[in-house]
Image 1 (cartoon, rainbow, N blue to C red):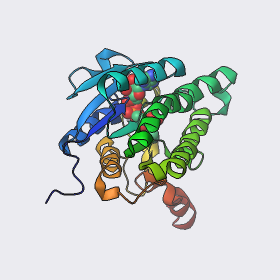
Image 2: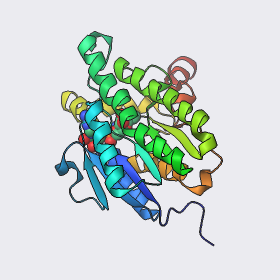
Image 3: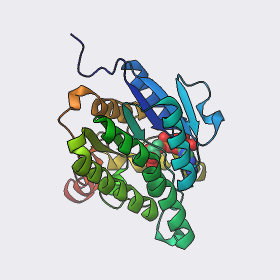
Length: 257
Ligand SMILES: NC(=O)c1ccc[n+]([C@@H]2O[C@H](COP(=O)([O-])OP(=O)(O)OC[C@H]3O[C@@H](n4cnc5c(N)ncnc54)[C@H](O)[C@@H]3O)[C@@H](O)[C@H]2O)c1
């Protein structure tokens, strides 16, 4: 009997496939037996990945994103699952946010993710089957900096629940993964500014380490598999315990470390 955790014969579209978490998503879905269509903003980002199809769009441009995805669906058909993973932030705190920054981080992380996912969800509902996963962030659950990005990532939680509630009757499941800090190229600019920054990150994490890209990817594979067939509308932190409580409060105030 085939394991319900396997995805043999299934296809998945992954955005931001060339990024740190994206590359692990590609590997994890391939290892589970799925074929993978990779999306990113430049062909160079997808080079060397084990993909059956590719599509390119700038997710900051909602119209171009929707058009590229709709064209792909017309020409190649509808995947069994989609992982909305592309994302970006540079504005670390409120002092770095203004109208333009707010608009651009919302455009990439929320509006573009909607434009990418919406035509797929509509086609999945028509087909009567499909699974959607959003890579959000712990920033959607509490404030850890990056205010505009956080608002967008919280918006993804609301959007995912809308899909789960309104499209569940048509066989579409939608779930959200909220990673904690993951050492990917998204951290390069921070580590360039302060190479010892990770020493300040680790005391916040109950597991004493950052999350690995593959740990995020494994959760996405689970959500898209039949093992999660009864699970929709959920929000899963993959965060090495960050949102379980405040370890530094316990260490510094109560344990006197
Ligand atoms: N790394 C972390 O600490 C962390 C924590 C929580 C959530 N996340 C989320 O995980 C996801 C993946 O992040 P990552 O750490 O792999 O970052 P990354 O920078 O390595 O990858 C991001 C990917 O998104 C793509 N992308 C960015 N802007 C785009 C645009 N305008 N159009 C199309 N594609 C675009 C990039 O090309 C890249 O492939 C993001 O949504 C991010 O917000 C990351």
